[in-house]
Image (cartoon, rainbow, N blue to C red; front, side, top):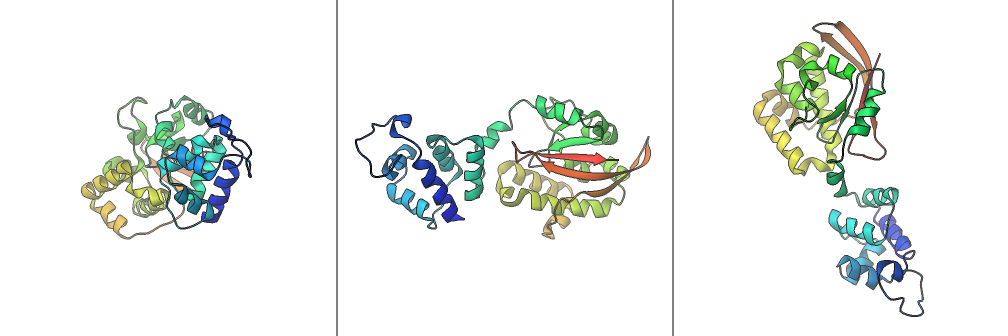
Length: 256
């Protein structure tokens, strides 16, 4: 993995001409593109460290440094995503993307003729359609511009309506916690996610007990059953997809 990261950085370093990053050409060059020393200078790291990174040695690159590399190397969005994937780091740009207007996301879920909603990494709902609102009134009945977004785990463990709505609540609660652990992975230490886990563990003994089990399962969909106060017994097949442009977001659809 580290060798692939080094190969990728080196290949793109050799594609960047000095002029495009504001450096003099410097006469004849043995290899095309930027020298390691030049890229190191532009990224404010030592040439030795950059050499080790390209050679695949066991050195660690922070998210901010990778972001600087991506900028200097003029990577496209897809190339930038690939860089962070190889390095197994979270792109700091995702934090800025989260503040972007949600209108395209809303249009997406509105076009789906079934309950559908979009969750971010900490399982806050960022968009949902009318069918989802009708099904999850106790969860999603908030204004779209509310300061606190509706969170699926808070609804599950802190809202009495969830226990009446969700058939086999105990089984679903255990699976949701295990899915959440698998979903957040190495991002569990992020402040917002860590705060959510601590809050739920303090407020719900059931969540605390399930979280302590360390269970991990994949979010593989399947049958979802509800006992709705107005619509009666309902059954759906859940399908979950990650968005190509925003890997921190997932689209959940409940298909008849």
